[in-house]
Length: 373
Image (cartoon, rainbow, N blue to C red; front, side, top):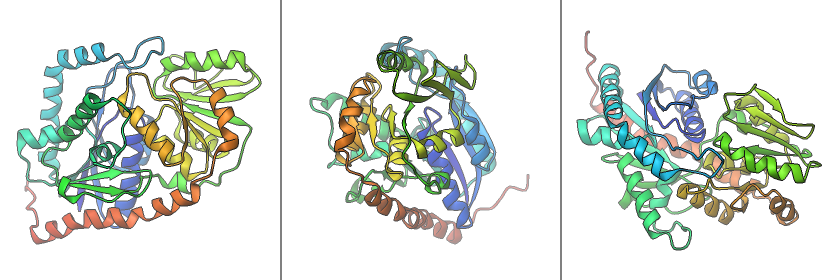
């Protein structure tokens, strides 16, 4: 089959999931004909995606989260204002997506939680089947455990997840652990998608903590803790484009520009991971047997959910700030879940192939006729 990817460009997780899915599908003879990625001002799609997706990459303007300048987390008011003021630009993006799909004419579209996926189906009533893949779809599962007193946020995030997957044929819900699927809700619970580069790593236990943050504004908290605990070696990855690729704050604190190979090498050798509760980062750490301290971005409900789910799954501990003293206290109590997690993960490839093969059969029965133009 010829398959087109629609990928949300915010953060790293959806990008690496697309790379992993591409690796699986190509190994079974399918072709990724293009990857369309949403971008926004001030945020670049990491170079590792262009290098590893092995398909033409097309960009379009997409909404993104606006963060407070001093590390206060998501600025909801400014985020909503920016989204509404940019509506004309986003409508043009929808048209650009449709034009590309009409020209490429794939057999299947796989959307990695892209904002425009469901809207494209709604507006253009495409006959090309779409499969939507994300951890966020697990939050639509009746058995998912949410933070307390969060009913309104639950409704809002699930409304967003539904909007990204309107008229989709399937929702593949990535999960830290095995949970029964709900076909009646178009929810198939599947293992995480990890790149082969992660699976091939040989983990060792180093003497430093690795820190990954979704936005460089959060670095202030890390620096404040570090100044009180300079004896703890920290290596931090951020998206700050205003400094060099490697910025040594002092002898025991170093900031690195996001670099896939470098990050994975350090993940394999760190003593523990501190991360802003992104699903993909936690999965990589669990596979390698690394304890995790999950720090949800303030006012970011999705990450709060990820953190609770991660704790239930045995990934580590969660806290509201980059107070790494909590991690130091937790480490002696951590129980390694890597073997259980790896067994769950390794059941995934056949599951994904089986789910996608359904559409391969449909394409064989109803072969498309390519335009002579």
